[in-house]
Image (cartoon, each protein chain N blue to C red):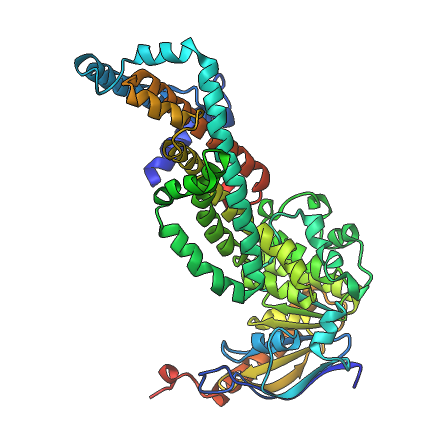
Length: 264
Length: 280
């Protein structure tokens, strides 16, 4: 129980919304696992991530992170967040951006990684003195990832971190992320709308359905680790991709579609 | 679009003897290129010619330019002294006005009750013509520095208050989320996030407020009869005696002060806001 993230019966309705954005969510994520949340827009995957991060409240049910509440985990600086945009501070150079978590909330007394070695791991050792506006979007997102790993978090939350990048950069960053994760062995919850991305990265894929937002199915990704390009493009991965796509289709039909999409 | 790019490509095609493309590019933006300075020079020459024509035909409308020059050259120290006197009022006013506004913005961003209390007052203060209050300030505070600095401070207060208040709230939501998951304290969010984010807004306000402060100082000198120094005083006294060349010499000094202030602001912006979109 204490060795996993447990969400039980979690329900949340936004004010004025016809259906709950999260409806009776049950989810267990063992420590050290890499889990992707995938589903159509409006399925509440980003909301669920924000609830786990303690950024949003909920109506009923509960969410426990290794036996603590989300706020307690944040107070201990045990949660790292990589938002959709890099969210770097433009007036700090790369090095100071990466080491920022160690300068905020010192009461937590959590030891941090050396920013130089983190930057080396994401291939940005040479850019330490540069400022965010001097970097490409992909490099900025690498800095954001290095920053999130900086406190050696127990839990890393990523909200479609690569969705704004071109395909080539996106794939390169996926490998960067995997090698960092294999080294740090933290638990990752990763929101994405790319099936391939989910398969490349995850141990489990949580397929969600929309309106109301529910967990439709949890699919294990039984590809060996560490993974490489061949593995991820191989027949097993392709079979799995079919499986996830079919599940997404079913989830789409299970959830009530928005009115304008209901077939006549 | 297509034609532009091809002609530019042709322009920049490196020839064996010609300059490298980068250098030519630099020359194109260089202030030495006639295309850069010629329009300004022509415009200035036209204005000067018009001025001279009016000054020759109607000497009570405009003084002759050489006379203005001679007046300035005659006693530059008098003008410098008066300019300094006006400038110091303007700067003291900015320091008080902008300083108070910045401090209040910080307080208001942390204490919403204070915001609701202060904002309406500030808006009323802003729409009140301060010049109308100036005589009353003279009655209250005498002919010394105080009423002039207060007038200038009131004029500079509002733009800074509004801009900094906006700037303090301009932190993007994802950045806030990162700070929230780190459990940053309110003070950490204020000083590590909100205050730096507000700097571009504060500098934009300064750009407006510094020239305004000179207006404030001059108007205050007009109103505070009996003050013996300052360009405003000089203008009022010279105008009363019909010495137009003194009036315009003083006006030129004021304009020069304004230009210097803007140049200073630009320098400060380059230093403080090198990271901001406005500097690219």
